Length: 156
Image 1 (cartoon, rainbow, N blue to C red):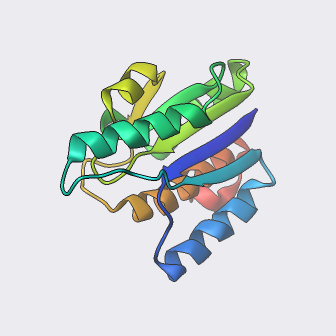
Image 2 (tube, rainbow, N blue to C red):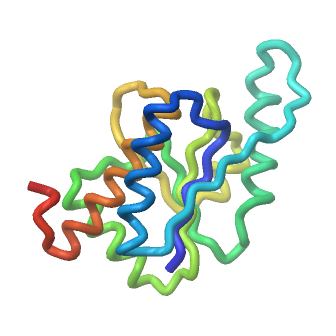
């Protein structure tokens, strides 16, 4: 199973990017994983949040195969502890999907089209965190999940 993290916008913080890359390298031992960074060209009008969400949503949909299982990271999604998330990952691996795409939207969230297309919603926290920080938290939790499944001591 291929796991992809689809994100809107680049990570501007060099230090975060180094940490994210470290976990990407660690994940290579457990799964096929990649981050895809998208920067849709927005025809935005000043502060037109709905238009921005629609254009980002259209871009996201263009990047996802119909057969892929789409999980959006959304503040209203299901929350897991680390062990629960590892079990969720195991369930996805057992499902037979060739690709699972986790998606972090832009600053204004997701368009209605993305909510309709999503197969699942998960939340990493009820707190408001930057989209750049969520990338780091997600790759760390994905790595942690795989170490839990393998019975390795990273989790402790």
